[in-house]
Image (cartoon, rainbow, N blue to C red; front, side, top):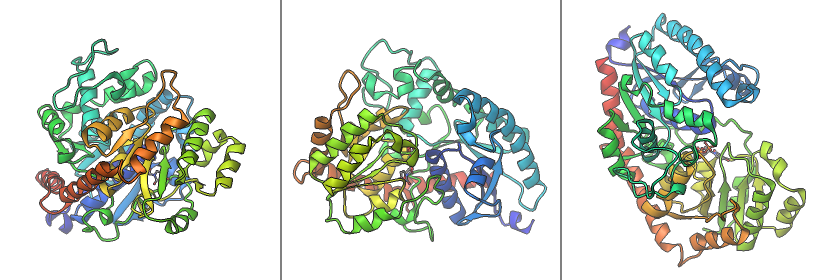
Length: 460
Ligand code: UDP
């Protein structure tokens, strides 16, 4: 009780249970904790079991707790389809969350606010049953959220019939610059519904948090701020890589994949700027043909390369190709690495990426230029900004049959890696790194917004 009178507030943080959604919310939790807010991050029972997490485990100062998504034994992989998973998660998760809030409310640390991943709209309804503050957390960039907002409200009709697309605050967009679910709404109907549904009850959210920073997309932030109470609170990159103000905040600490420790010592031996770091994140599954083109494209550049292929996806890497990579003596394939540690290593000259939002913003924060090969969801729009707005990389051109050739990959990487060609991009990358540090430092736009969020908690 004494603690509450002194103003310490308790926030429940509820991410969507995947790597790319957990990382930003965990990082935001650490920031809040460093400013005196008590934070409990809630993951699923399945994640807790598979990672041997205890409810008393602390991720730094962040407390952990769990709810059931209805698939305690196998998580998402246990469900028949994404729509089955989402509806069962809503049904079972709502009850599990009610019990969890009741448990905390009868302790010395009752909940003041629930921050929930914008995909999990039902969390807001539960929070409001308890009269709590609700903050929707958009893990994707503001431009992408605003495009979805436009589609949801019928301001942009899909399928798109007229080009280019003009949305206030955004550059003019071609079809292949839009998120995959807008480009082709029939491709993954369940995900299309998920991203649209983010806006179904947003008017009930007290605050909308976006994992971006003001100067990165100032015009679109200004536009979207007119339609909801928006605060940019990113980049949610560990403080060690930015302002160094949060003690012991050096890396993303909840890895859902088995880490491979060989990468860092391999990198240490490489000359500065000589390595292409390659990763397509946690969800993309490349076909054998795509892997083949990528592998030959990488080998053709003559540069070193470090390629993350999670074990589950390795089945698509043809055996012979693995041998060719070993034989060339310049490539290392690993299961999963601490990405920020790699991106901040001097050996890395560029990041060949699928442009997942976390990977994109991490590269921006660490000043690493990118070669973009977006696959689906928000990645095409992120790649558009990388190439045309922030000018920190280039996008590999895809043939009309959807195939990317090894020649195209090799040429694109050369443009970014080679001294003269990539100079401008490296200069721009350093500029964004500086602006990211300014945003989170005391008095920066993000720091001010986080303080404003905390002040709202105090008024609750
Ligand atoms: N990541 C990592 N190690 C790896 C590959 C990725 O730590 O070997 C992290 C990366 O730093 C990022 C997240 O996993 O925070 C991937 O998120 P992103 O949004 O880029 O892609 P997604 O996995 O959601 O497609």
